Image 1: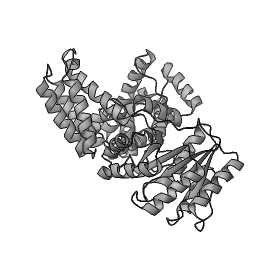
Image 2: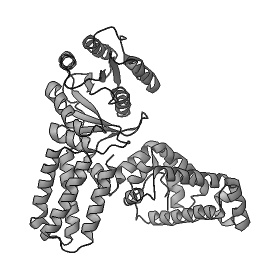
Image 3: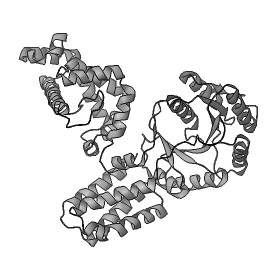
Image 4: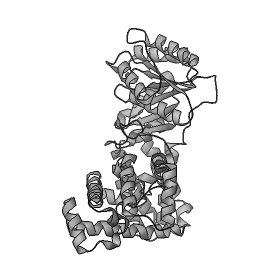
Length: 446
């Protein structure tokens, strides 16, 4: 998501940075480019106009003229205003009302509500809550069975009455069942519906009245485009949504839905669905997303992902090896294999400052990164334990044998060894405290 917008904005700011003093003419040119970039990203026109006007007003004011590095000041203003447009991080409301707290998921059919219900339940359990799922989608074929299957997969109870009962009654009795089971949070999976379908929207209003939810979250496909505004406004006017969950953000979404929905409803984006996997779900941080859009990386999210996927004891053991300069090619191989579990490599690399530009230039796309990683694994797997633990013994004949075993050229083996040496040099800098500590993270691509 936002790749097109990110590329356009970064190209614009690169051109701006090549100049010296920033004039009002420069600012107007930049704002035309920003306007086009946002429109191409499917951001609604009224939202674009408001954003551009706010940035231009600040950029042509004394704020830029007094800056020592005016080009960077313009980038800073865009960063701040884009963060403002995306809003504050939204936390779930578990502070009012009695337990169990009820969360209603609403949205169009096909937006991913059922899978999102399971993802949200998993997230809440990780935070120490006792979630309970209610299958109230009786209209979509197999929706109830899908939620029951997901519930069994993640070990979270699901209340259902099949497809014969009314959704309103299912929701009400589901909340009561959760209360008796001492659940702390109930997630109601409602049926998908158009915001213009009066009968089904009335049904949602009645479910809300009968269950008194703490949160009504609109689950929206990030690839919705310009229609996102009408969808958000329609649901908000009828049921009063309290937050947004954007799904399929790992697809070809232009990203405008996120900006537009947040702006027209004034409710926060609370979560992002980042993949089809159950753990492909993350809390929305506006400032971090803007960092990614502007090519500044997202080190905090990277560190959090690493902490989720790397065992604490193993991470401490690895850190000790790094501090003692005992990190081997076997350790390197193990960390690469763990990184593959963290999500799409392109997404991971996009969190590292500067790497997004390589991706957008085509030097680092997902397929290429996967091929490189597999090639590295094949090369290290072709080594003996002695060679992995002491690469200094790798003379020309050994390297030729390894290349044959891995099905690669000798130069590929040399590249991996050079890469490993660079990584050791980087870790030497890490020991001196010059880089942030990221648990278990080797330098993948030199």
